[in-house]
Image (tube, rainbow, N blue to C red; front, side, top):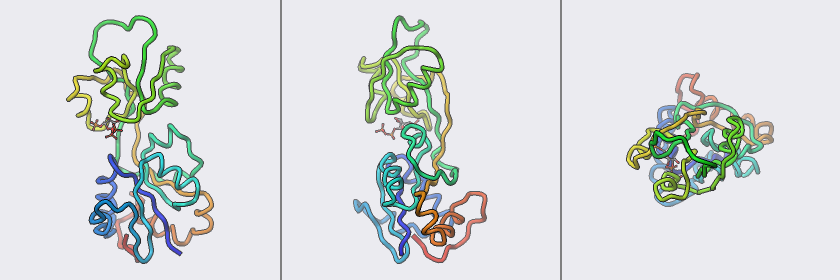
Length: 212
Ligand code: PRP
């Protein structure tokens, strides 16, 4: 029986592979995978997917474990076991837009990849807004006039800066997390434990018996 692990491609991918390498995993097959999405070794099956799909694969038991941003878990609330916080993929959720001194007139339009997070943020503030859901490059929306402001994650701040936008309010902080399928945690516990212990930031890095 192999352990199946889903990793998030894109923003978290490089940081995740660096972290696994620091924790004594040989990630060479994952780095050298090219366009291949799934890599199998003697003990592991590892595949790469978009963050929200990592959560779906773990929730449905296709993957036993996943590494995904906490922003995805907060937005989509998948039914998974939220195992451990990891020290990478650190970012903030922010309201951002074009810098202006003027208070917004009337109802604001907010573009976001995170409608649930944005809705609760404005509900707590008691402000009624129109939300526009986008799938990426959200920073374009205020520049092109689709929205007044955006609610999005900010990691280095480079995307905002290079597009002349500023943070107006920060309201959540996230990191990457290791999640587990609820029944795998019982059925494959002995297979999962060495991996979980190896990636736990509190433990000493050590060689696990089987590399990725
Ligand atoms: C995320 C986010 C911002 C950017 C922030 O997008 O939505 O656009 O990263 O990072 P920074 O503060 O380091 O510039 P991502 O790269 O995941 O791509 P996407 O816009 O296509 O979703």
